[in-house]
Image (cartoon, rainbow, N blue to C red):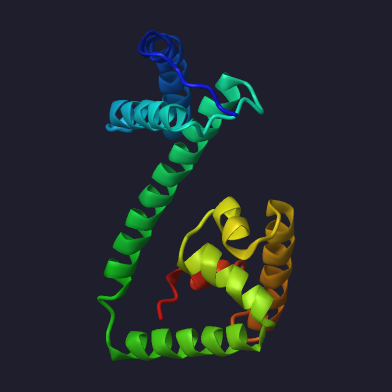
Amino acid sequence: MSRQFSTNELEQIIRQYRPIIGFTIKKALGPQYPEWEDIVQDVLTQVISKLQKGEFREECSLGTFIYTITKRRIIDCIRQKAKASSEKIEEIASLGGPEEDFLKKERAEIISQTLFKLKPKFREILYLYYYKELSREEVAARLGLSVRQVSERLYYAQKILARSLRKFFPEKNSNFALLRRLKK
């Protein structure tokens, strides 16, 4: 059974953990990240909301609970930043001529065919993780698996896929970047 926090307790939590959250976010994202204060506020809002909803079941310490929320928010920011930069790269790359368009379509077709040769359980893991950009925890919850099982299947699927794609793209060190750019 989760307990309810009073307004005074919530204010104390904010005073105590705001500097720690701010330090963690600045350290992870870098001080040049202009929205770090907004992210701190967002994390604190999530913490208060989860505490009021009773999602903190005291299975771990309050600090661990808050750190987990902070870590997930940092990961979201990093993913957004990476997605934005990859979109810029794709936009620049898309300025190529018709040969480039043909090569992109051919590459996407090869990857698509290779993906559909995988067993459905591996294909689904790759789809949810790369295309839907869900975390391992979210994939595990959606599929009713443990996070470890998701990690193992993801690793195995990547290994099979890399081996299969190496025939077509021997010059690439990592073919998973191609997966991230693949759109349906």
